Image (cartoon, rainbow, N blue to C red; front, side, top):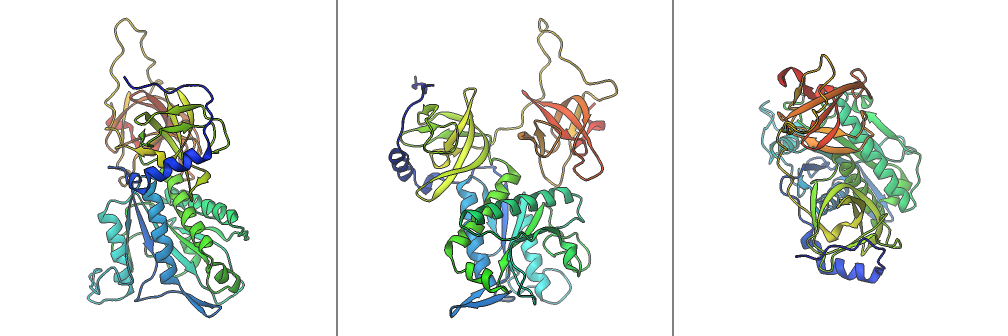
Length: 428
């Protein structure tokens, strides 16, 4: 039988961790089958090059910068286990010079519509469009992130935008870039109607995106100081890391299960720091439960860690030493307790015994540890799955109006779900 890990403080050096990572390599960092799809949109192309600037004789063009950052972002997300699609891979307009809006002409709307269509066709869970800003006022600088408030999932749009903005700011600070934040703003603040990739169908938008989305403006090419920063590869890397961090924070882990694949196993540490004494040494093949993606000490340029649960113990494992596995199938409805066991507590008077997860634009309902979006995600329930209802309470009003949350059971997990994501009438 396999050797069980030892729950004693075991010393392991940084050199050993680095050697293990070198042996694992990038081949182990493959997307998880069934993991959420992330659509990354590199803004602009040869049809519309976007903003530009000259710095020390070098020409910076928005279309080139967006593609470079988008590719890095995609790479980071794939390493973390997500599936990723880029709406363009090169300078060519994604619509291939065809009329895709049906208005019998080919223009910029077809270029943008093709990007939405690609994200929809691939079943993306989120859409992130990457841009760099320009303004007639050269004093403007810093990062902005936009979202559409005019969608049924407006609250999700804003939460994604806030997660990306916070992560980008944090990554920029790591490389010494500290700017007064421009902040998260609704796209209607720009005037002229909603942004094409984010807004609802109607007017110039032939078909709307079917997933939460945000548009990030990294820095201002029209500002000399911002443009100078964009000549530094570390700044571009920070922007890519921030975009990936924000998406990962929004989506949660791409899978709930993983297995240790480091040739020499992996250290379970109390924090994502190489200087901490390991709680245990986990042999290759050890199964783990993933809780969330974290960031800590870097080994050979990578700083991704997983917060994991192993055999009832929580800790952190360096991400390249772990391979997420396919998400588990939906849990069956909870079986009734054995006759000899005490009866399980039923729902409060007036509540149904079961509820059905709505098809929230294809998004899973999150079971959280408390009735708030700030509470940790315990598990995700798929559309049309039935959950046992245990109670109700008043919590965070996700959309600013509805504050009712239901306490539910999914298999062996009990958590809180925002009530508009459940159809109690179908669960009885």
